[in-house]
Length: 99
Image (tube, rainbow, N blue to C red; front, side, top):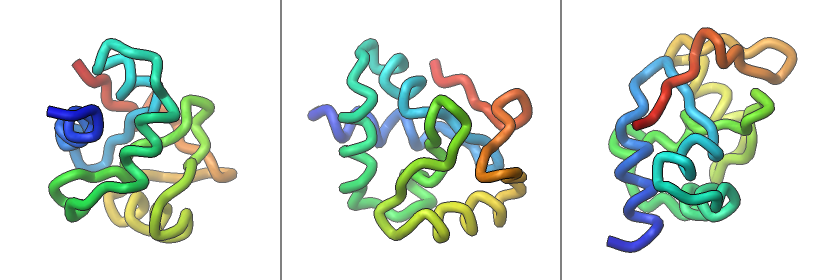
């Protein structure tokens, strides 16, 4: 299994209404390749219900990028009940710890 497939497998465990960070995904893979995680997600070939890359945000609570646009990412997160205030997400409330 290549790095991207490992990322997709980890991401698929994040439940609706929760988020994780690029850093947490990398840590779940026992590495520090945060940017590589983002690059893999940018090329996600799977549907969002299989690999919900919109649920991965920056460690500083900001939304981060999204292949189909940040507005779309925000829309998808809000649809799942994630509250976004001042372009940030409260990790105390919405963070999902990957194992």
